[in-house]
Length: 286
Image 1: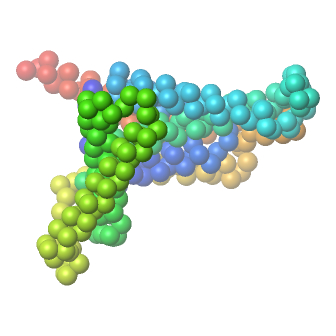
Image 2: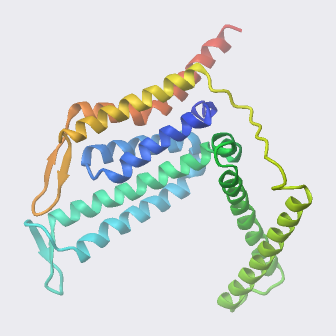
C-alpha cells in the first residue's frame, strides 16, 4: 500500500506529527496512551509491512525494560504486591506507572519512525527552507549523512571480515572500524565545505524550489487536526482527563476526548484505506 498521507503537503504532515507526538509524550493518561500505541502500530505496519518487524520487536524490548525498571527502583504506592529480597516493596501503582511509561516510550519511537519515513529531506527544505534556510540545510545534510555513515560503517566492517581481521579481536577491530569511519566522515565534511564554498554558498540570498503545492485537501486536513487538538486541550483544561498513580491509582477519562483522539490518530490510516478503495474502484472501471 502506498502512503497517500505522505503525499500531503509537508506542513500538513508536520502539524499532524507534532500534535500526535506532543499528546503522546506529555499526557500520562491511560486511555490516550493505549489509543496512540494501537494507532501507531497499525500505521507503522501499514507503511513498513514485514520489513518493520525487527524494529518493532526492538521497540517492544525497550518497552519491557522500561516497564521493569520502574517498580525495581520506585516503591511508592499503597497496594503492596510482594517484597524484593532487599526488603523493598513492589507496589501495583509503581508497576502500572512503569507499564504506561514503557508504552509511551514505544509509541513515541514508532511515531518518530513514521515521521522520519514521511518527512523526507526535500520536505524539510520545502517546510522551513524560506523561513530558516540554514537550519533546513543542516537538517537535510544530517538526514543524508546518517544513512551514508551507516552504509560506510557496514562496508568497512565487511572488508575487515573478508580480510580476516575480525578473529579474536572484537574490541580492537571495532575501534579500528570506528577510526576508519570517523576519518572518512571528517574528510567528507571537508570536501562538502570546499564544494559549497566553490559554488558560492553564502555570497547571495539563497533561492528555494520545491514541487509541493498547498491544496484544498491540505487546508482541510490542517483545520481538522487543529480542531481536534483544540477540543482535546479544552477538555484537559477543564479537568476532564487525568490519571493519578500515587498514592493510589485513580483514572478519570472523558469519552469525548478519547473519541477525538482516536479520530486524530487514525486519520492517516483512514486516508490510506480510502485511497486504496478509490483506486480499486477506478481500476475496475477500466
